[in-house]
Amino acid sequence: MSHLPIVIAGLCGPVEGRWTTGNRFEIRRFEIPVSFGENHATPQRRRIVLVAPLESSGKWIDVLNIRIAGTLMIIGHIGARAGSKGVQGKNFKDLRGKPLIDWSLDQLIAAGQVDHFVVSSDDPQIYEHGLKRGGLDIGFRPDHLATDVAGKWGVWQHALEEVEKLVGPATAFLDLDCTSPLREQSDIDAALALFASEAPDMVMSCCAARKNPYFNLVEPDETGALHVSKPLPGGVVARQQAPVVYEHAASTYVVDPAYLKRAGSLFAGRVIPYLMPAERCVDIDSPFDFLLVEFMLEHKTGDTSNA
Image 1 (cartoon, helix red, strand yellow):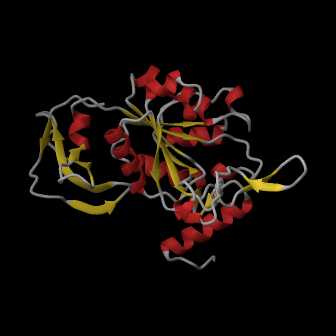
Image 2 (cartoon, rainbow, N blue to C red; image 1 turned 180 degrees about the vertical axis):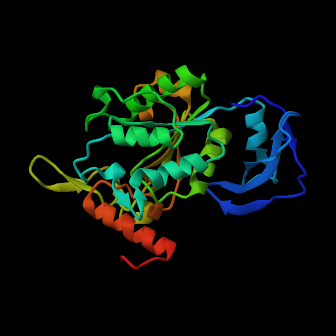
Image 3 (cartoon, rainbow, N blue to C red; image 1 turned 135 degrees about the horizontal axis):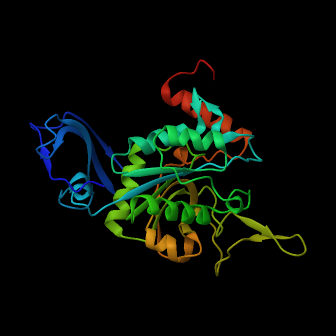
């Protein structure tokens, strides 16, 4: 995390820029030449991300200036264990010319707000790959966190503890799920912006649910008869009458490190949704999911030669 004074070198406007619209935020991402202090005369390319709530009058938050002031330290994390029952070796399985993990890892590295990142794994190949890409060396994941019943929370807690031993206290913990390669770079920007604006314990990626437990999700009773999962007095006869529910999309999370240290599970505090389109929330957990994601990436890039 830099504490150096920043000098804008010959800035007369964005060198490279694009506008995107995220969840409740408008985002401007561009790069400018900057130098750090008098001893760094050669300008470097540095990404700046500016965000503003859509309902505001246009006041922009300059993430770069916040970072240079030393008030923000964001740790990026990707978890990728060796075993997988649904798709054998899926985390390093080739997807459109690169390992599945790299679809998320490339985005984490490209996120200008992230100060350091780590790949948590018990797989030597995956772990060494993360180190070669610039990840911090925190050692292999402990055995008790490398089983198919180990949850995210304990893995995150271990990673945060080991990272802070190396680089000091973090102010945000950003996790990108290795098996969700369809998120956009703008989703990361917007999730971080939402976290900074709302100051929750955690921002969790979600999407609109295709089914609703108040309306068209059913469960059997002890006799086998079906009933609406969450019945309301008088019943719900139309989807529009049902309370809003979301699907928890395993894609993008931003966590307050203090909350991560004290809580025992994801939903022990104030967790708020970052809403993503359903088509960007496919989580690979089966061979069909893998084929679906491969198909969507082929059409997204315009290359349907293997479709």
